[in-house]
Length: 322
Image (tube, rainbow, N blue to C red):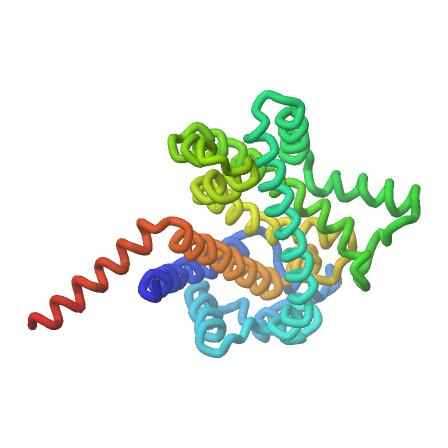
């Protein structure tokens, strides 16, 4: 198992490097001048040239990319903000708990509700429970997160006054953002869970379990669900990554001072180092989500575990014979 996890960790290295190169290249080639954005339209050519030199923008592209990657990977230095001249890493770490808190709550809601709705639909095929679950899933797939967030604010904050419309504080501040951020994940997981349940529910081992007199609850949670988990885990991993990506929109709507709102402010002000730092961190989070999915595969699917254990035993035997 350790070898399997180590292999997946090594695969993260080229992925992160690719993300860094891609976002740096895209920000370098898009139209716009950060120096002009910072100094304004009244700046003289001499002032613009001096600022570009101070920011390193007058250097060749490969030199800028190499300097950024060296500072990032060897010193964990994301640079300074063009606008505020404050360390970006410090600003991101101070905002990370808010984004992680919102993301984790949204992930739990997505997985728990999605799996429960999928089980309800799969075990009651073509009945009202199935239709109701799939209607909820269809609404979740079709409804944009930002529109749902605005509707939730209008209803529960403006009209009813039950929950705060923006900012962060106690648990009540997380309710509306988490609902808006998790509905798409609930829909995707529910649909995949239903499909997986229907694939295994008529298997011979399920019929045998029922013939032994097991309750329907035991049949579903001890025999059907464990054998349907692999496709569910795949969709759940993608949904979890989408939850953190959706935090950019949700944090903007609810004025949550997290990484998403910080990145949006960097985009509007052409603060390229801020955008690069936020995208790199989100890329690391996505990669870790996929790593957790791979680890879950190894625990759920005995074939993966047996494959790596068998290879390890062969190596040990080979060393012993030598």
